[in-house]
Image (cartoon, rainbow, N blue to C red; front, side, top):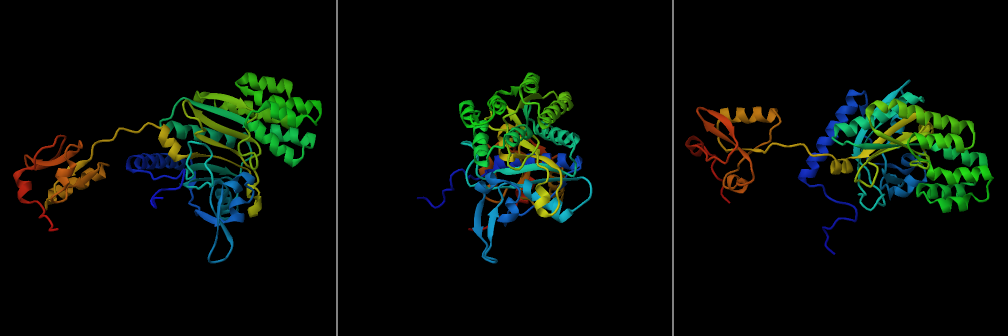
Length: 402
């Protein structure tokens, strides 16, 4: 076995892709900043109890664990930055009123969440704490859609769900936790026969409602069918009303909006509206989020909260790459005017590198680079592969001996 092989679903990011990812990171974080979201940088590893508090069993299974050689306690490599943001809001900042936070960094998963997914996503996201109304849900979803648009991703399909619908059925039927977990998995897979089998012991109204959930997917007609067919429980009615209201407040964005009442993403810690963004030709959600009120309670402060996150690697795979200008080669010349020209070009965002003696020009030939040349008493950028002028040749840096 070759020692330099990387583990499965772990890979290096090479220069062109790394540059694209970094440009997206800066663009999205700048968007968050102008919307009032403050950047935080939580650590890559923490004590396991802190990382997993209030986050649910799924995150526990995704988390790599190791023993701290200093304290002997169990540490975890973060599998999601959202719980860390909740800890910072509740325990460190402890501000009154609304707090808006954003972040960007690597997370690590024990197993990939899909056949095409890495075990080391680059997560970027935004979280809003301290407001329980639909206005904050709408703000977060609009911010997510604007971030995708800013990245150049169009034709987005937004799926909206509400975990309170399933929770209400579970509570009214007093469904045991083990059966609830099985039902959850069957609903996520939209396995209607499995749902019917698991729901068989319960009252007819509950059986029919659970079996219907995977079919309640689509536009406004899906909500209308849900209002007509699901039990008239007050919390279900409130959830359906919230879904209709949020979709109405996003209508001006001209995004394709669908409702999915079997969508239970993040069910173990999210408690209300959930959402996911999809694009044609990509199998996974490109962005996702939802409301997770009171996760901060374990850190001493229960707070309403909503947010979303994206994987910058997936974002970069979908987003169009901006046209970049060819780098500029500069000769290795001891010339104050040349140094000033180079500094000015770099300040304008141009890539300028200096041909090192004995190898730069030869190795750069044919790569489409532009060149700084001295003509008519000044340095200027030439788009071709022009020869270096006599003045340049006489002032070249001497080659170093090998």
